[in-house]
Length: 336
Image 1 (cartoon, rainbow, N blue to C red):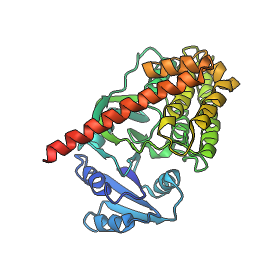
Image 2 (cartoon, one colour):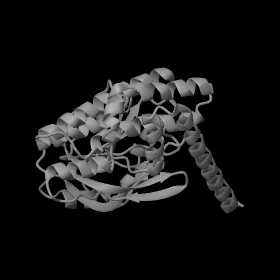
Image 3 (cartoon, helix red, strand yellow):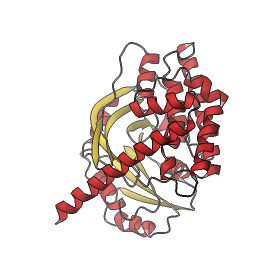
């Protein structure tokens, strides 16, 4: 049996779609665990309503503790041989469970592709590896971003650890690294079986969260570097692991124009602190950045050009806002 764990918090508008996609699975032997994480919007009542119409659904009510706490509660209550995690604002293809089970075979973990929905776009992402050896395949999946989440994977329950409830960044990756330490290989299912709905609020981090985020990003960077060193017997020379750290910083920098709580001077100070960080500067010397906007902004930051860095971010923000406006206009036209 497969246990599908769904953390639920403020999900009343999206939960039914998510659960219906799980109920419609072609694989029959499954249970759906809805973990109500103290949601204040009536999602808990909706969980009970959905469970009343399907014996495969079980509801777990708990005090609010965050998504990692909810997933851990689901792991404790799961009865299946396998685990799948699904977020309550996402949904999946009808044959997801069946194809993951077929794909895993006698292995320990299966990873599938997914649809990435954002800014009105549906981008299909499929995992690709060179197939040469374990370390190259790990770097390929890590660089493509396929190891950062739990919701496109099939796990064996007996090998699953727990999510670190003290972290607010990178806990999913650490869960996966811990799991991979117990496995002999990774099975890939080259089909987009999940629909990931990206949050597009455009909100930037508060100063305290920004400091915490950088510290956490460095922690994840070190943990991943250690994992690769254990796997390969040497440091990562490709720049893939360093790139992930730099991308976390660049994501924050690119979000600064959306921050309405700070003055331009304060935003320039944020960029300046990043530019002066010795570990970031060292990692940035060997960071395999692929996206053009990342490359341009990082080029400026490494030279300490904070004003030009911010101007590039403002230009990017204008393009993002224009794209969002265009998407909204298209939606309004469709409804007329």
